[in-house]
Length: 399
Picture 1 (cartoon, rainbow, N blue to C red):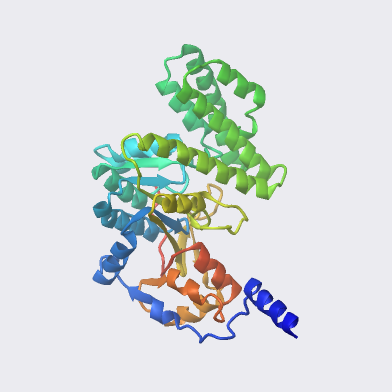
Picture 2: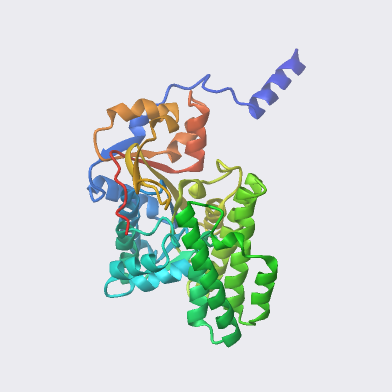
């Protein structure tokens, strides 16, 4: 009999039985509602979270204006904690363009002009609401990092950047030739509503190798290498249908690009602090919905190594409208209802929400992880620290 008891005890350690000894947890004890981000309750809450932190992730639902305002608020609150950097879901060239425009006398006008010249080259941030954030970052002496891949219709923008900045005549002539081809391909894609028409699908290894052969400048080489990397990543999704590789290679690229910025920043700041504004999946700790360990997981461990911590928000609309960011869509914004996408515990809370923002502190719930919570809710509470739901979200104001 003693052996049986020992086996049962070991099994109970390996596979805890869900909810058999604990009382049901009331989520309202861990949440609150506000109509304005500036309310003292939320300021006190965020300042406590920011203490001894190194990284803040805002995992967003793309296309709604409230996320930009939310990130802007956090950036203001984080000034007392030495945060000066905003990291966004673009490549380095797009981030440089955004910072330059945000530094200009008329940022919105500059951004609109760029969008007219290179439409849809900078996704997610072609709107006035996010430029309030970018301008605020620059005004406070901050920097903007872009760690993502080059967007699929962005080749023409990057060719133009190389043309404008290089001192290498041979490279300049070649990228101007390629920019013309990329412009023609984009117009064809829009006219024919053809996702396979952009220049990324024409860009081949011979052209890539030829570009690399024209320069020995490290910065130019890196820009060109990023073009080929993004072609590989998109190919895993659109051509070979290797979706894990698509997500994993993109995650690896984000980590590598982040490391490059981080090491450079360390030359003047031992432990740089960064606020990230990325799609919700990229802000999750641990194994993400796409079964990879993303940039957010790297940052969370890095903060721990530095005796600090990271904060991971997921910010979603409950219902509302969102910008589509699709040149082929019949409308620039569409209504949405995310209710059924949330875990059942959140679905049960939604009818009682009366104010604009619902804030649920997930982190302290982890010690009750086996107290009758659904699997979906458990995943949410371990991937993110704080859930913010927005009632009647609005599409951002596009250019």
